[in-house]
Image (cartoon, rainbow, N blue to C red):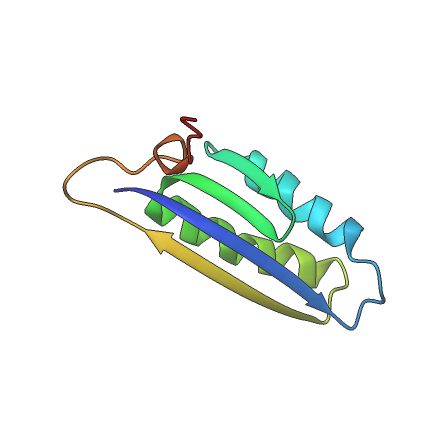
Length: 96
């Protein structure tokens, strides 16, 4: 089942800057067959629902293995039965 999602991963206790961990998360997500769009507070993902859920688990496993002691993730997941959800379909258009 196709889905769109927004993922925010917050490493806690790793210091003030989390750029390295966030860059790693984005790299892990891009290694999958997803459309990935980053923004200031998270990452938008388009792909198969089960693959997205598995990728979130992988993110936690990898970051913990690489030294992150505590991670908090917020995942918003959307599926539809009337049409295939896409990130492009979510874009707001300025028509004037």
